[in-house]
Image (cartoon, rainbow, N blue to C red; front, side, top):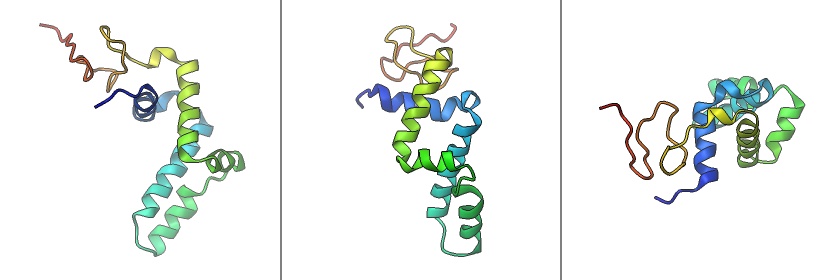
Length: 117
């Protein structure tokens, strides 16, 4: 598997850095998750409830940001979190690539291992 810094960093921020996201960004996350959830459901009351309460952002600014596309929104959130909270991104001490989680003790890219022995 090839290392794509932007893709790996986006996945990391999305999975590990929710605590660094603003309320605006979290509203976008919820809308994206709601749309994803609704897409997997049969038409009916549950789907409509999810679309109404989760997939449709109440803030027009969030809706406008999501109109640019999910990938653009994710990239903007990633860039802001990396800029404002660089300490949140944990990298391998050997190859400097982004780790899977903040608590990882082995790099999945270069296989460097720093578990205590």
